[in-house]
Length: 181
Image (tube, rainbow, N blue to C red; front, side):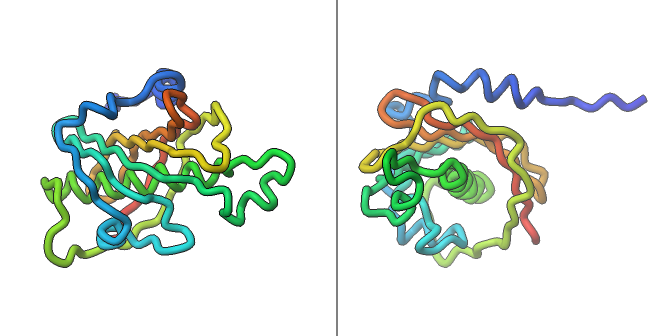
C-alpha cells in the first residue's frame, strides 16, 4: 500500500498564529520592489492589486516579505463597518496570496530581481486550505506581509502567509493556486 506524506495544515496554521514566519528585519536580501514592478510579475491591477512593495526575499528558505498601507479613504471602509471600520478578511487573504505569487516568480526564476519582460502566467485560486483572523486591520495601518512556499509541483502551489500590524499577527492563512500552463 502506498503511504503518502501528509502535512497537518491546521497544526501549521496554529503554530504561526502568534509568531511571524520569519524575522522581517533580517532577510538575506533586502529589496525595494515597487508596485510597477510587481505588475510585471503578477496579473493583478487596480483596484485589486493589494501590494505596495516587496521588501525582502530569501530564496534559500523560500520566503518573501512585502507591505501594504491600508488608507482610511479606501471605499471598503464605508460598509465594513461604518461604526467600526475593519479591513475585510477576504482582502487580507488576497494580499497574502498576491505576495505568494510573487514568491513563486522569484523561486522559479532563481533570482531576486525582475529583469527583461517577464511572462505573467495565467493562474486560478483553487482553495483556501485554512485561515485564522486574529486581530482586526483598521484604517491607516501599515501591514507587513510574509509568505513561505509549502508545495509546488509545477501546476499546483501552496503557500502559508501572514498579515502583521506591528508585532501582532492579524491573519495567517494557507492558500493554493494552479498555474494554467
